[in-house]
Image (tube, rainbow, N blue to C red; front, top):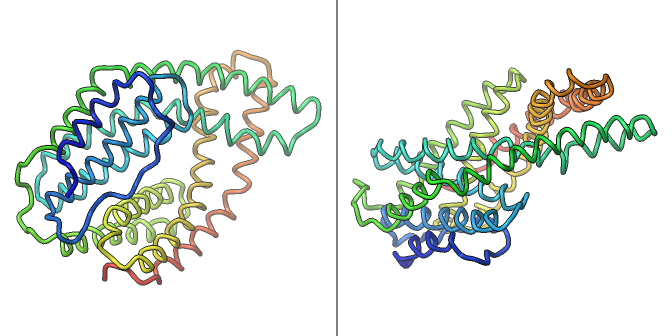
Length: 321
């Protein structure tokens, strides 16, 4: 069983003077002999470790990867609180999940602009590589960088703020608590039910995504992310090769849906830059329109590809069945 003090140690680590490099999620220390309560606390502790480590990195300076991994930690925590809250029939856990969503949203603008500047702007800029094009994209980049600086100040204030510190302490306290939560003391059947519930939600979202509407595709992407996180949480309970095969199918679909989400990211950032574009020359407006058009032209092919990959995933054998 995990050391119950680990959460408090992770909570204190966010005050370290010399934080480590950005930290990715690690596999939770879950095993079949655990009770559901102990599994919940172990997963909470691992989510907390990822969040506090990356918050420490960010307190020491700007880190694109650190911010990304902090938001991954918050999303993994949201899934944990939602799934176990339903399984335990403990609706008060939803309040904690709501706070995690609020904090994640405060970091969202900085992350969107990071993705835009570090990844999304490169491809259309390379496709339009003339001298006038270079000047056009340079103006767009400069405006986006100015907006990113502002968004990062807001993100840094969030991480340094009282709401974030209190939230981490509350999660640490819950991870240490011996408060009984589960009505059924068998972990494996509960994990089966939780995974089946996530898979059913993904199937429902996939049926809606046949519309090819962006909102429906986004909801499918979120449902698959929750299913993937849950599968990773409980992976040690099942045959490794079966879990690996199933997760590979999810990841292949997520790759395509992620590229579709990039299109939405680009549009979000362009909308943020719109006021500046209206005040400046037509160069900035033309650059913004070019980026949007470049990504929009690729959308139909990606949608078809996503639906094909979903058809393969839905035929895959569920490793918990």
